[in-house]
Length: 336
Length: 282
Ligand SMILES: Nc1ncnc2c1ncn2[C@@H]1O[C@H](COP(=O)(O)OP(=O)(O)O)[C@@H](O)[C@H]1O
Ligand SMILES: [Mg+2]
Image (cartoon, rainbow over all chains, first blue to last red; front, side, top):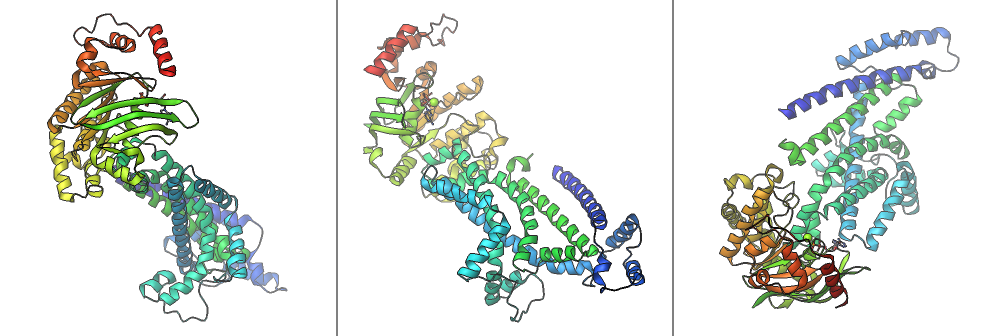
């Protein structure tokens, strides 16, 4: 009952949020300087040419009018047509989304693995030099932003010791049997592990660049909660029962210490997705973020609008997912 | 024969002053020994030293903890853990924090029977059910499926008592097991521990600051002051004629169940000064 109410409330707030984002973005990208039509035409185009094309794209109308037209289209599933790519925005955006999702989720997985391992090791070896070393490494990881990690990784693993690919999503000469745009997932499903390897060797460095700062945040917070939990009476009780220190950390402390980290991971994951914009550019990875930068450079208003809305949908979706997971994991919330 | 023999145990805070000074005490098979003393005397430290859960900041500087013929302090950590886990148990002070909030009651009792002692899941579950019945919990099957926050403090302490007795340990350390409970519940829990102890023949090291409790459940007691045992006697001798002046003063400061309104004497400063001097220089 309470859960249903919460869910309903969340859906309403989500809808309002999305509408707000749509309105703000729509107006902002139209008042900043830069004319998409002028950029499409060759130099020396006449004023009539510009006026004609402007009218074709509806940019001669007032901004509120444009918005109503756009919103009317959206309600029927039409997000407009890209000015530069001359294709429906929705198809373009949905075509690129899988690449970005795969990269983000891979990065998230790496961040959780690295951060989790650091936190568990640091807790097991707390108050030793190992913990000190982990703390220092995390401090360094945090003080450098993801795109700089991207440059460092390109330099080290792409140039000095070229073991990984630093450009693109997949080797262009390969024959791809895929019917969806989820290449990584589909390569695994089709048991084409040669392709999986090729995809991973392209994705590893950008994913790592995105993962490093998040791994440090996860590692710090999780270790802190774990260490606090290790003093609690039920953990001490488990020790008297014959459990080893490692087992105590894993099965007694971790399930309780993980909740605050989980909330944080949700928020940070949305930042990570935001980070894909620059990282995809850096690694020429054909995802949504890379497309967003092209769209902004070309003042492709409908495309920018579509991408931003999609990002907003992802962000709110992730937040909802985190809240639901939190409720599922915490028995005190579950039983109200 | 002594099941537990603590010999000349000394401990201190790392880089600090002593916490335990040359502590010796024994708990015979099936005996209930009270460990009394004012707050901060080091009672819990002794229990923790035996169970191997001393805080990291505390180090043992000398002595032996002989459990069933083996000095625990000479065992490697893993062997010690297994030995203590198989033959000892703890009834903790605060039932509100001693159960894992995110796990059901059932697995909190059965898990270590299966994981550590190698029981089958079925046997452990049957055992948990029987024990909850024994600690007078109604509808035990239901309680086993509940989470700690759904239960009262008294219920949780019953569960922890049941869990302590689950593997038929030879020795249970009860660290002020009723202090955190309502007064009305305290008596029931005390009776329950005494009854289970008698039925199972478990040796009990009963940590408390309440002499009234000692007179009810213990056969022998050790009086601790500032980390030193100042008196070791039978309950009958102690309440008849305490040997140490500090014990006598402690007794005079304890309300009598027969006559709670009788005038209480706070422990005189002179007695405190004398015992402090004795402990620190003797
Ligand atoms: N984690 C700790 N680190 C250092 N000293 C401690 C710690 N816990 C308790 N102490 C000190 O040890 C002494 C004995 O504590 P404790 O055994 O808990 O007393 P009590 O007799 O009340 O159970 C106290 O003086 C306390 O200040
Ligand atoms: Mg204590």
